Image (cartoon, rainbow, N blue to C red; front, side, top):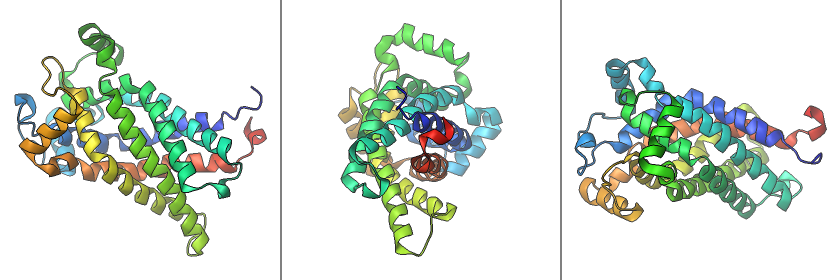
Length: 290
């Protein structure tokens, strides 16, 4: 066990928690935009928000500023588990396949990214369910995080806590499998081109590029996942495909890209914090901190 490098796990988790706190209101706006306009659900049929900024302003004015952080507790717990495992396993898998970062290839990064994303997101799924429901409901949900966990378990059982886990794994596979390799490759080529060094500006640009790629690839899955996790009682959607088709037919294809702008805007700064920390870990020797 003395040879195990715990730094990617510890610092990856801390970076993820920090990033989550800084971008949470944007994520909440994304969730509200994704659940509105559902023709078959009277509760979410109305189009209340015209965009990210309108959603944040209206939520703050009607529900209070605290509502912008509805669901922050399970979100923090999610990142403490999901972020820790994701970054830690991603770096560990890469070091198992190649010893030096400069020897990494696109295939290596994609495989490691997908594996780490699927494993971490599947474990953290119950926190994701509660986070999305608290974001969608706002002040309607009362009580502590544990009270709501117990409430979901009592009414819906274990299946309720792991509702949409396959979608969560698919989204994580897409996001991580796209974002981390695109980030690494963008940063690598920017540095090798000679136009930019290994500076904060390089990481900033790489993060927004990988955020755009991740948002484009994952947004349809994210919309379906959010709606599936948020439904309770009599199911409006019978499954992933049914939710996808109903959304497309009743609201149009672009409904699958609801919340795209806040999704991308969140992923950019989120990855600046998260990926910067994980990248620095690669260059640190285990003996220097432990």
